[in-house]
Structures are given as C-alpha cells and as structure tokens.
Length: 140
Image (cartoon, rainbow, N blue to C red):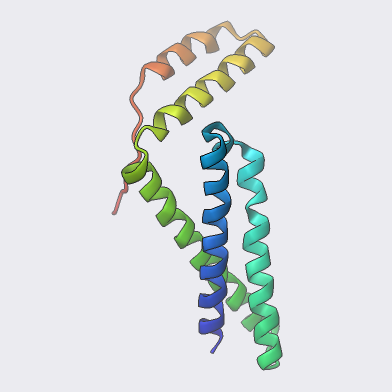
C-alpha cells in the first residue's frame, strides 16, 4: 500500500523538479547551473516526501520505520525521474550544455584564482579549459 503512495508522490515531485529546472533552463541556461537553484530544488523533494507520509498516516497508523521507508522510496523515485531528465537533456536534447557548464566552471575558477592570487592555478585552469568534456552513462 505504501509503495503506491510513494510512487504517486515520487512521480509528482519528480515532475515538479523537472519543471523547476526547465523553468531556469528556458529562462537563462547559466541559471540552470546556479548552486542556489540546485539546492532549492530539495524543497520539492521534501514536500513530496512529507505529503507521502501524511497521506499514508491518514490511511493507517504506522511506525517511524515505515514512514522512513515511504519517505526514502519517494525520494528515490523523484531522484530517478530527475536524473533520467538530466541524462536526456545532456545527451539528446542539448549536447552542447556540457560546454556551457565548462565555460561557467572555468570562469568561476578564474575569479577564484584572481581573488586569492594563485599563479599556479591559472596555468591549471588553462590546461583544464582545453580538455574535452562529455557526459557518459557508465554501467559496471
């Protein structure tokens, strides 16, 4: 019974997280990589987990162990939904997104090197920016 509730709210939260990231992706691709955006998406995860536990509690009285299991299953389903979207976005819909992410990372590293006056880091940043990045699915 709790698996159905976790599946329902896991998919709802997963679609919510995907929609949240798509909002930033469509508005400005650089916002898609903002750490505040990534961390604030946890609010959707937590809301789905809490709602799943509340609905299960309404149906039956259950111990903390079962609530934790329902919450974790909801989190897992939400994560699988988000990472499937992320994989498709990087590999099917916008393969150039890796280059945008690399540019943002190199710019941030350059700012940090300038702020802290690390001369060795500047050489490493130049070497890093010449590398080719790709996102691959590795299955052991």
